[in-house]
Length: 230
Image 1 (cartoon, rainbow, N blue to C red):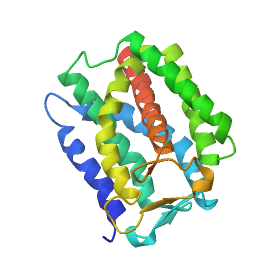
Image 2 (image 1 turned 120 degrees about the horizontal axis):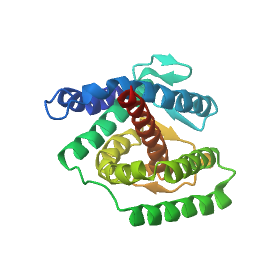
Image 3 (image 1 turned 60 degrees about the vertical axis):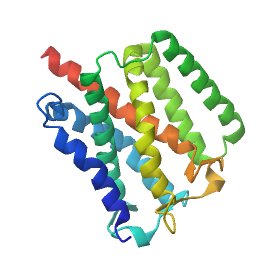
Image 4 (image 1 turned 45 degrees about the vertical axis):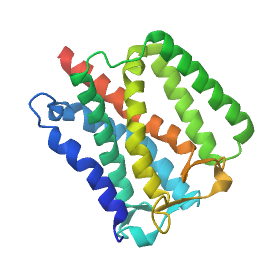
């Protein structure tokens, strides 16, 4: 089980990377937009992650990592912010290449947005003093609000993919939080979250994942739009 975290993130990356060169998918052509988008996301999430790790809001089990750390974070965590978005954003564009109409309707997207935003606001009312819940939900509310009001079509396209991604999300994040293994790879201080879990996964992780991936997707689309204008 040594280096389990490393093998999980590299395994998640390997197949999407290989299929990036498929003649129909050609995701490699979006690298010019994708990697700057990841850099922007990491500029937001890495400081957040590092501060939370240093503060003991969550941490990493030395039994499952190489031990190399940068700014309190294992090298595997840095790779997580590259490999997981790569696999997920590749999946999004692959699905839309194969199924061009794979989108939610504007009505469904609006209903989902209102329900999700309302739920996050209500939960914040009760859990505002839990740092992971507070920062996570505030970021998601701001991001969703901006995208919904200014790029609703992108949200209509992205949300179906996000639901598909839930399958590998539960697999990978489940293992990281202790499902099927002796101990946790990533542990959480439940005093800083709601204490509600989907199996072993803190429920906040679903919103964290949404915020991370939507950030990368929106920035990728913005960069692509600029390149296409040139």
